[in-house]
Image (cartoon, rainbow over all chains, first blue to last red; front, side, top):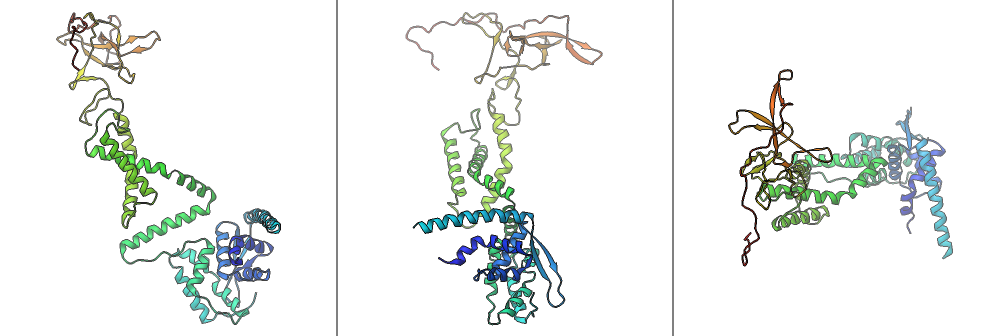
Length: 106
Length: 333
């Protein structure tokens, strides 16, 4: 089984969890996901997911000017995003428990 | 935040990514790729061994994750450009609907009703067809009344459903189906009203223009009164007439008037009869008539309150009585 296939289904909740921890810009979120163990996550997948969650109303966004380089676009979680995260957390917990039970039983 | 430099390679790569997203609205591309150079510069500052991926593959991954559709192939020419524009608009609307749970729910609900629409558009096509070929007959236009009409309707239903299911499609048919759907939607209401106005008429006519839905007609002439004679050939009174659907057969409406005397020197109002329910009935024959007077206050003719409703002159005092058929003979229909 390919872990990258599994990742596609849970990238939303992973990104939400990282941003809930602390606001972050695109590559910052990628770095934190990788540091958290999702080493195979693709930059573009994370940027696209951030954009989609923002369009769906789960994230806020603001630009931080930089004197040394290009401006940074930061993403932060909002109330709708927290609700979404809570729901997805529950779904994940139930799903992973079910899978663990299934795999351990056999 | 790591301080990093945007190299020319990164600029070229970012341009390639934006070019691969060029079919999307400009705002969308800007939002998707804002900060791309900075992010890449930072990523490659951390890992100098890393190679830049294929811009098109990178753009495809970005699209997929952002929930945007894969790129449509661009075509040359004004017409195909228009087609692309329509397709893009349709896709943008589709994306907007999918992003809103309430709209997505409505869209899913409507999608389940599609088979009903396939039948409706087949019916509209059938109605148009029978009007065009002049196969209109009978007093019900809702459904076919003869074998030919059933065949026509069945053919339209089969074609419409097969199209709807995505069968029987060939190149170039899609625009025709779109046009057909629009035409069917536009014609739906007129066809329903046409079918409605032809249902349950008490007379048939070849012309659609000269329809007066009130009254009884004989060879195109208005029937003003009806005289019924019993089996014994004698004039009957107080006969209530109905058509096959139970609708009252009326020759006049409230306010209807006609000649009071044979020479038409005076006019009179037709008068209704009264039922035991207290209601007035205009389908009781022979109808009676009452004289009219001119009301100077209202400037209108009114029934003369002093006059009594009078019987109309019957065409025959008596007609031949009905007898049972002589032995060995049967009436020919």
